[in-house]
Image: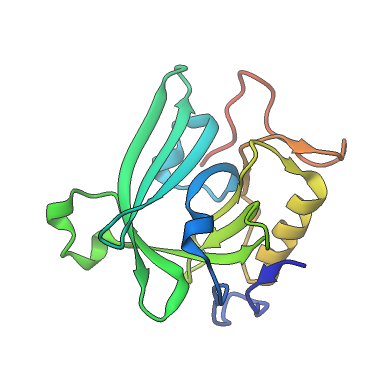
Length: 187
């Protein structure tokens, strides 16, 4: 059994996050399996990860990293804060701390679906522009991926541009990561 947010078909319906989230279990290392294209990930070709660290002030340290086309690694540090009253909704900022007072530097990060054992997560935001499928392992079972993709579509996401950034296991017909040396399709 998996925890999941209630979903409304169609982009016009309201978005919901999961109702419960144990932050200490959610913290740690995640591998990106797929994402909707975002400008700051254009240079990423492989080994895309997110690492969340609980801080003593109640915020969450965020470190996103990936391997770039030139073979080097790109990393960015940020901070997340939980939205009061919603355990699975966060606001994330990668801008310098002194700009933290500006609302526009904070982006929504909502956990939309979560494995009961915290092995995968579907993350998005209420405008349905951004979506990430994350896993604790660097690959994902093709059946689990297909179910998460369907769940996102049922929530009103257009996944026609979904970038699959990691290998899928178990189904030869399932779309997988591009061959070594090829960059994933980006806009």
